[in-house]
Image 1: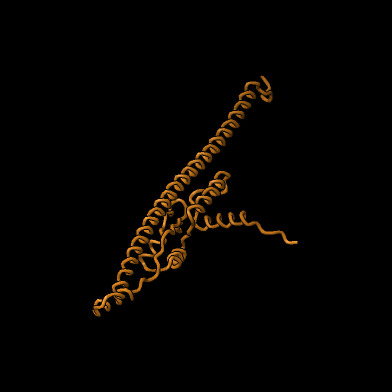
Image 2: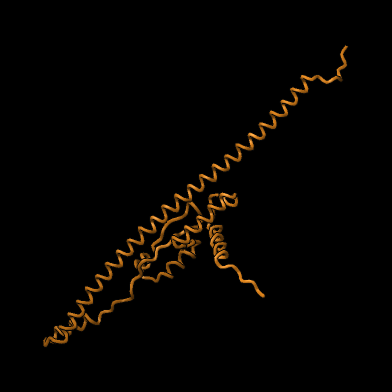
Length: 212
């Protein structure tokens, strides 16, 4: 009877091949996982770039609307100034006391404070990026509510919003894209985390001076 302790070369070969196959499966699974991560990061970056493009287009459009509104206001103000000049001439030259009284009333009317134009900002709400991002025309809201722009911005900030210029927003998206590529961040990004990106950027732009 053959010694059962003797090793079967076929069995050893089968075991070795099974081990190699198992190792290959693990390597393949790791490759699939890495590819899935790469594709997810790529998709998130595509989403961010699309968001940036859309937001910057909205900023440009709103800024153009503000320029048109400012132009219309300046034109109207010029016409009113000419009208007031005409009224003043009537008041100075007319001998009719009633006409002079009416002219005086027209000239005494208050022009009020100058309206705001041109302040367009990107708002990031508590929902973060990319879901809670839009463009806010601060000047338009100030004109509608007859308040200062600072009041409008303080109100938005007080409700947990962040406000950025279009240029700053674009720079922060670049920084977030870099973090996604290295695996430091991923979507969605909270408003708090996005504000930290700005702080990091400010530190890079204004590095602390070495003390002697």
